[in-house]
Amino acid sequence: MTPAPAVPVPTGWRLWVAGARPRTLSAAVAPVVVGGAAAAGLPNPVWWRAALALVVSLALQVGVNYANDYSDGVRGTDTRRVGPLRLTATGAAPASAVRAAAITAFGVAAVAGGVLCLVVSPWLFLVGGAAIAAGVLYTGGPRPYGYSGLGELMVLVFFGYVATVGTTYVVAEHLSAAAWWGATGVGLLAAALLLVNNIRDRVTDAAVGKRTLAVRVGDRTARVLYGAAAVGGVLMAVPLAWTSAWALVALVAVAPAAVLTRVVLRAREPAALIPALAGTGRIQILWSVLVAAGLVVGS
Figure (cartoon, rainbow, N blue to C red):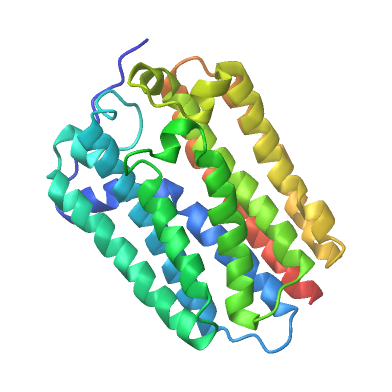
């Protein structure tokens, strides 16, 4: 394996921005965009709630990233990685500070989500609590599910269905087929985002006993699954056409998804997969914006 070039370590606030892994934040923005657009076709949407839903989603994603950095760092599973800066493992920030950053981000999500629960339904406290628990237990706790190959499934559930359908519900207090189909597309693309990350880290994860989905199913199968999730997510624009034919414009993202699938299938070095991570995030945003525009125009 070719050694990865040394990455300059930022300082000050730039260090914490890098630790938040901004390339993954599309997974937080996309469900709110699509869920909000699905709410546009329902009676009496309340749009300030969408803004709070975005705060919740972003804070949860940042919290997950910091919590993952902290937990993997203290477990010693992040010492040989290619890709984004790991604050704890590299010693760029004290573990206690990274843990505090995760707690702060989850706290922001809890406060913003609590407001939505109070104005919409107290039952949403259960959903919010489950989302925070899922973020913490991804790589934290005695039996982290991210070490058991369940990460992609949980991303599909929480950053697909819960975040997208949840946004529609808090904005309009009703649900629609568009919210569910949109959630499937968003969730599959979010799963593809995590999957390419885990394909990149497969060898080092296996070496430290971190049995992600890519480790469990093997390199080639994981790469095929990436293509199925990326292209399949984009194709969810087809059932959305029953709500608005304009949603079909999002199918333009099929071409870049196919190109990235080819890159992932052919890449030999872990570093060669880093552009696919950023590219998958861009496809998710492109698809979400186009689907959202199509739903709004057709509402």
